[in-house]
Image (cartoon, rainbow, N blue to C red; front, side, top):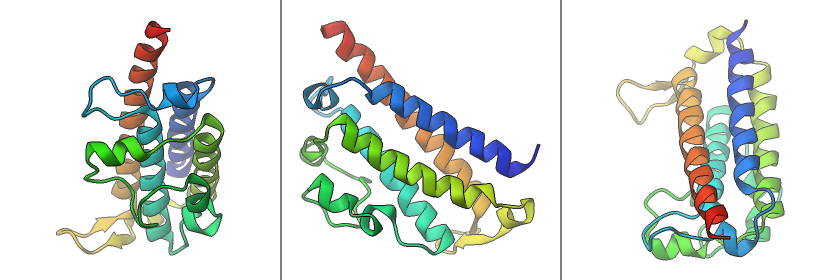
Length: 169
């Protein structure tokens, strides 16, 4: 098995988990917060998708799907286009309100772009430096693994919140 095939599978599993966490929920259910400082399903999915979009665009020198395909305007959030959710306070988390179709549409668009990039990778490509702000510099392989880890973590958190939402029905 090639590295690219493993990465395709890993990103596919994130997409599957995101769909399971979001499908069939109302906007109100997607924005439930189990604690005033907790993240909602909508915020978690928006954030994990924004991070993926941002990091893939940076690593491959492309425009983010967020702006290139007009998702920023569709979400109508009170954030700058470059905002991906790091450091958001509870008021910013609460501002992320979207229906399942919008959340999944954006996620699927970013996922498709990610698969386009990952599908053609060779093992040698994974050694390419993509971020010089760190010492040592970050190469593509670890950057992609960090996206898989973050995606799985947030998709799991969204699934957890969904379980709570469903118990409250």
